Length: 322
Image (cartoon, rainbow, N blue to C red; front, side):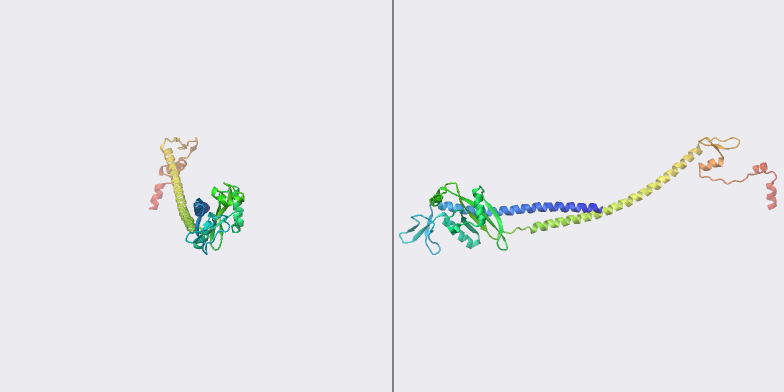
């Protein structure tokens, strides 16, 4: 019985463990999906902004101490002066991406990095992991992402390719690119990404496992007690049955004797011996003793006394005693 209880407990814990593992993997997948969607949304927002800029052929903004002309932009109309004497410089998509990246980094720590295996600007040189991912884009990969540890909390980095469009050739045609080529990529690093919260899952499954073990133990103990009670009851019934069977056997034996005594019994008319069912002749007292509970004691009646012992006078003995 104890082995059975242990087997049930092990089976229960195995089921709970498998279910916990399954749900834990689902949470990890959901955590990764959320990270990808968040980074992908930032990347797409940058692409939309760049598309708007490229659609207008770049935009002009006032030159300041914080924003100076892009020395890597080869455009005769890069810098202009308005009628009021305000100096303006053209912001192309790449330069605007860097400006947005600076703002995002200062405000919420999100880092954008425009990079390429063949960059015009040295600062756009890829890191080791960006190089690996850029090479995978040239092999057909659509996007890459993974978690990394930077500080006490995990972060997520993501990268997707930049595909050469018609508006890109104004600056990059001299590098040998053509429309549809992978020119580079933009990486997005999201710091302090929300840590997986598995505490609730662990607590829930722990309670379920412990509760199952407790219920199994309680059920096993109650079942053991019930089993012991049934065994005792069964033993008592077996004793009662044995007693009743013994009584029935005695009753059947008595009944058979009664039947024997109740039928016609062959008896010798001279010696008074009785013939049994096997054909043997037995004395009357032996036959009756074997077929009933009657017991015999022997004596001599007055008639037989006179017949067998005529020399003894019973009446004279009685008078003398008086």
